[in-house]
Length: 589
Image (cartoon, rainbow, N blue to C red; front, top):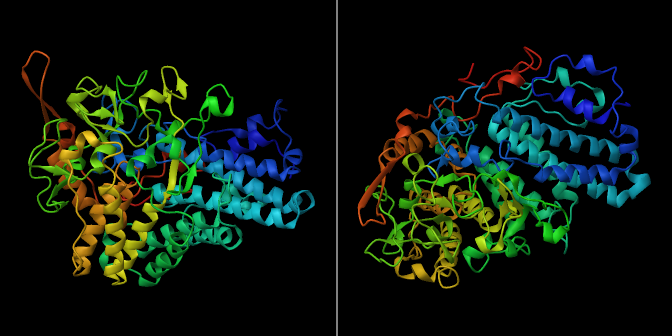
């Protein structure tokens, strides 16, 4: 089994490489002999963990282009439509297997991560007990299976039809015989569930000082998420939605979220604190990809979050590439009337708050924690108040900016150059997310009052999140709990749950995946494209003139096609890695 470590990755998981045999006679230097590497199972496990944050803006492991740019929550941003290949994600109509290389990079890097997991499992099998002892070996195997499930969950979420490469494929060297259609969607998910179940059965709850390690409660959250996806159908609209609900799977969501609800995790007292780096491993954080600042870990640049390096606000940071721009539709969704959402007419008129100018229109306070807007302090700091100059391409993408993934400007940048990056953890699961999953399942099981209690607890926290950080917007905020018995039936309860999930989790990289899970993506997105292309922001410039800036007109070219766009195409390079080995996703043939 002796191979050269680095070369093996390139040839077996290649990004369209050809002629790998040409290199096999070369004896590379500065690489680790595989037998030596396998003799150190703890190091192999650490190498698998290291892949959690081994991301970059062209292959962001938090999937923000796939889960947000694709949705009604945000526009791509940047300098224009040709800035990265993500414009196709924004409008869907030009998305093809040959769309510029970001999809291929994501596929490749996730399989690199899975390769490290498989190698760690083999190392543990061969040398774990002799080096680490039985108990530690069993725990490390469980951790690595959690990690492998984590990476495969992302692959299935984006590409659906993927080859299952595990440690047996590695040991047997059958990569080039493993088809991506060998397993059904549900069978692939079952393999992922098996990995998370193996972790759940062995791992302890989180121990002090082990914020970045997989634990039992994180595995429970992932099991709930897997079953919630399967409970709604197969992901394609024709066979997904309320007519395809599997109540057995919904019950599993409740069962596994029992563990989370009864754990040491809970709601942070103030919504704004959740997204400040000093609280990044709070009780809200069930599992997160860890980052660090160079002052914390004594490295040159720290362990920054490179997935979000494009998403700083223009003119606020040393550069700020101004991607991940909240939509007008999202801002409108935060409108309230008598403290409750304006479900039916929220998007009838364009509106936005102006700092110091209260009006009859009131807003859910989470707006001011989520969306940066002209006239308001950037991330609560008045010395960095935003203006219309803090948008890079306002005629295309408007004036709003995303706040959750960035620290306060006064805290500086983890990486200070023409790129800025921040020591902001990426939440894989926060407690409120898991409780919303639980409420979703409870509704489908007709336990409506329990779901209402969860949603009201989340709304109460939002109501309590004004004075500490956004007192300047207090007169513009109004939020109320749903009156007892408001959830009179599943239809009403679903509407409230979906609205709450949108507001609470806005700009956290998952909105599109929610719409797809519920089987309503085409309905929501095509209506959004029609309205967002008419966006306008009106302001008074320095000369006292009224300016009406229109934007979003490019959405005239956007359309979401059910039966095709639910999942992304298998990248061209992967389809022709070995011609005929992989089958393309439906609609992209």
